[in-house]
Image (cartoon, rainbow, N blue to C red):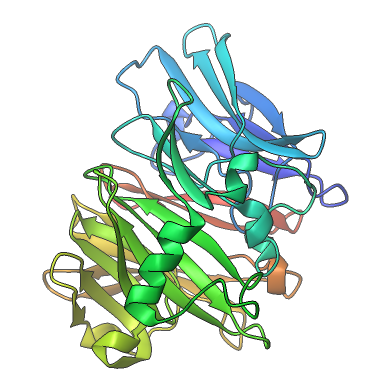
Length: 364
């Protein structure tokens, strides 16, 4: 279990610690208090913290994780490999690019332009850096290898813009749009190296329209849908579970729906029609999507499970979030399910010191 804690007075200072689950308390999922390993990051934001991720490996003796960091005002990522037996650091590797997501299958990562992202979505970027790789001057999104550090698939501004012009007749070279777009929410398929990302364009009032892009393993870039697209997850290599709408499919009401990439078609989900925006994640063993809700009038947020084959909806948790957490500092639960489908982790707050924390819930 990876935990992140930070000093609220010095918000950008974060301690990343790794804890074992206490073998004597598996039913209650209590973590051992003392970490088996800890390190430090100066890159931290309210919504995605330092983006700490385990790196997929068949080597159980040496485990690796990666996270974003800042030094001398420069944004980058660190990869640390440690020995699980003696807890010694085996290797440290620095990349000149921050990560947004990493592949579950290969040692590849996606990087995006966080400086541009900070113009409109500060809570998803980092406010305490001023410098980043010059690659972002030409390529706002690209893939790099965690083994070699080499750049793999990369998409320059003109490639993205030409696809946008052909599909939506929108030109980012228009002076009115030059600094009013960003890229966010890159997400790998869990079954291949295909990935998706959002291009978001803002008007003079800060309102946004989202464009979903799909990148195949051979580097083809496809503009999929446009509308009020918020969050999504892969169900399989061809299906996305999305909250939002799609103008091109005449779906104007925002709700959850399934998008089939190969056919450019959508499947409406009537039983979820009244659910507002949330953060979905898919569990293949359970054939279910877990998602959260934003606070209601009583500051209550909930976790739900939606079974795809039966359309059964189950509320599994309800939490009341204090008024202290709102706006950019809000607490979104961001549910995350493990591969077995038996443990769900999510973000919440510690009622004893009124700070943010990660919680874990045993599903079965």
